[in-house]
Length: 438
Image (cartoon, rainbow, N blue to C red; front, top):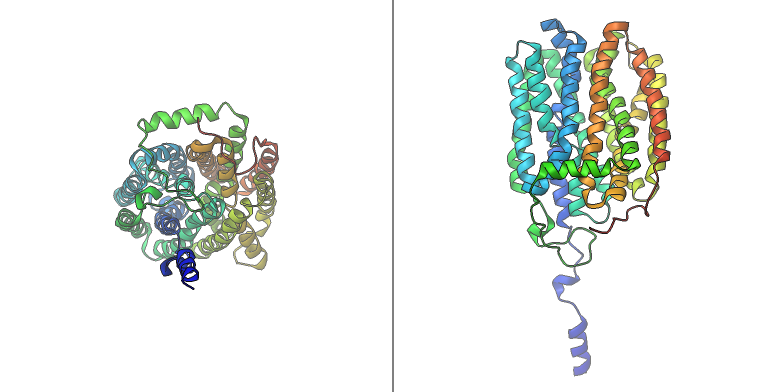
């Protein structure tokens, strides 16, 4: 009896250890990142709403306003790889807090502008630099550091945060612009971005080692916190030069440039004025973009789940092909009312909006290992360069032809090309496997 009791005592774990496992801290960090991206997404909802008010107040052409938006979108992408390297050097909290402050300053200063170059400086340069540090490379960094499993799902959730921000802020900002003008809307963006700063500083953590944990899904002991890597700019450039010698980088960059052209550059910037050209109220058109945000959340999270289970190349091909097909039908759907075929387009396009992000990040991780977040930052730069070009060219085409029809058709053709490019990407190792460290 004594031996049995001793055996039971020896093998029965303590009461505290018999309880179900607690939620891993990585999910709380992901939640903080999600809320942070939602707050930062408020500023990204405004550019498409500025085109008509600035044209009416200052007489600036749509191409001029579109140029400022294109600078913003291009810097959003070009800043991302350096921001990812800076997060390795100085930590996530410091970089994100500084980025949100710069966004707040840039958005706030726009209320005092009187010349077009000031719009380019404030909204294009300052807000572009700040937003670039809050780009999807931030989501990739969180997923890579805190998760060794469920990375695709986490990436999808964090990517969906941007859509959630659009959902929250776009109807509000469109209402403010319609009732009170564009200046109060710009001030709202500045205040929201600044309000997120203390939230990030108090709750965000840089590494699992900071709280004595291993990454989620890692069964080993907690890994020590990596030493800060000096020369963040040099590392970002080295990662680009190394990746640029490989074919998959250019294919990923090309497909993602078309992704940016057909989403942020085209729909987010020009859908509202294009719908207004057909007699639709600005508030109604902005509400349709918000509906895209709802289904974007569903589509992106589902895409992350699919990415953990299926070939990322084929997922990309399907996403781009469906997106291009939907754009070909858009000129026939625009009218002065919200009718069922338009709602179907909005739902369809929303599901596909940034569903491309989780498989693109997965392919970067597969090809480039520990530098994948920085390489994805460069791929994201191509996304924003494509978005910036179409933001400018779309406005210029509207000024030249009097409608956006040629832009919709051209973007649909580009998406078909992107689908073919995705299928050409060669896999060099089983999906999800990381290369051995050098």
